Length: 229
Ligand SMILES: [Zn+2]
Image (cartoon, rainbow, N blue to C red; front, side, top):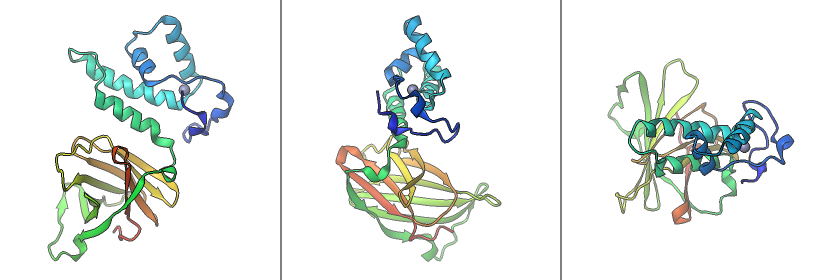
């Protein structure tokens, strides 16, 4: 049971969770049982009523697990993969303010910028590749590609995090958070290869944060100093 304060207001529905303050949320293992129908009927009804009450937090967990359960049911095992569970847990952490982090900050420095490169970057598919930059932060490298589709107001940022000293280090399921000042703009989760993708409308003072909980560190890339187009 997480503190309700984490989701004071649902952006999509505008519903305040304060009115359901006394309501107990259900955790990931309970939702896993729910989507597989392995819980008791009383519990199932209780949880169904909770969703109908409009809890977006639990709805998100449930819908994610439903998708995973659908995939799992097509395979022999009904186990929810560990990676999927980590991903859901990372998403539950979505509303946590990135500034509250007690992790040691690793500042990234720019080591490559395609605008300084005489070679044209070229066009790939329908996306015009506008700019490619490479940052180093401690042992880590952060490769960023800013893509802008013609006529679109938004920018697509495709990135990859790697550990240069130990390239085999798994950098999967890391939250990648885009912030403007103290406000979270959007967030994603790195895949098995440490890759991630974010779509956002460009604004000033954008920073990319990558918490590395296991190391007690957090990467910070200042995009504000990088012209994005
Ligand atoms: Zn809930």
